[in-house]
Length: 403
Image (tube, rainbow, N blue to C red):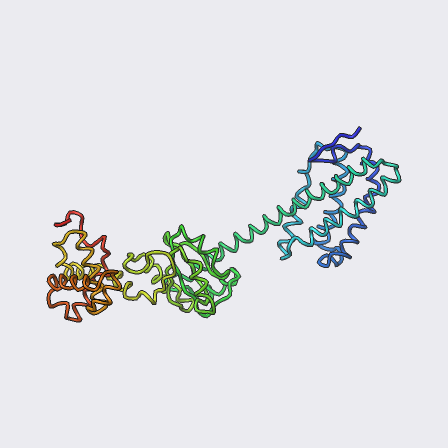
């Protein structure tokens, strides 16, 4: 009586069936090879060289192992599975999907079953062993197919890892200062499979956000980490739809984008992008979204001249020192609105979200603190610089008078 084994159905077959199948193997092998060549366009060529040997070996080995498993089920699939793993790797190496190989497996199962079933009927096998034999053949082919999928995935991972490393090496060359020789850059670009653009822009983000942003960018963007900062080199940043794509990719993540430059000057774009990212929130790089260097040139100027800007802030904002922390924050906000709107109380009220009469009251307080300097364009300019370079939280130490 036959026993049912769900995972390895060949275990329930009598070893005598192996004796029945074995004489059929040469004819089955040739028919499978002929059918594959006829029905799978990618394999419609003479089975010669490495390709031919791989297919012929795969078919012959598969049939022999199937017979061996019926005789000795405990020997398992491990010995010899490398043949099918390698077939999967081979498909990836030649740039094909697994569709052709999977089609070949299905053809092999179909032809083998037809031939073996005919032999079984001639030997007067009953319906139950024939059914189990069919189940065993298709389960066995599924395992071979899974081995090839594994091989394909391994080869793909290897290629992707090599591509990633070559692109990181290319990015490092592009970011060198002084720039690398053009010949070295061109060779590195070819090795990385990267098309040399007319212009590119460097972008900087937190290294924790790099993976999330990189997955949303064009495939030709170079991704790496420089000095613990996420770095992206984006070709043709001003091309159709590129800025919109960057904005969508950074809806909740802060990305500083440097100016578009020739690729050999990527280091200059990167220096500005990273400086903007590292600038204080008052410098405009705080919060999520895309921040272009061109939109924050004054902020960068202040950030790069931080010592001088701090001296200026200490001098121009000294009249606020005697206020409480809350009053100081309120008057800083009012002062910034004042210099932006040239003292227009209505426009200030709109920005501050207060009644115009409240804005006028605050203007009176400002005049009491800063006097006639508020009417001097140069003083107003310096006041705006001072307010931009020192965020409210840094305006005064905690133990300052009036805190």
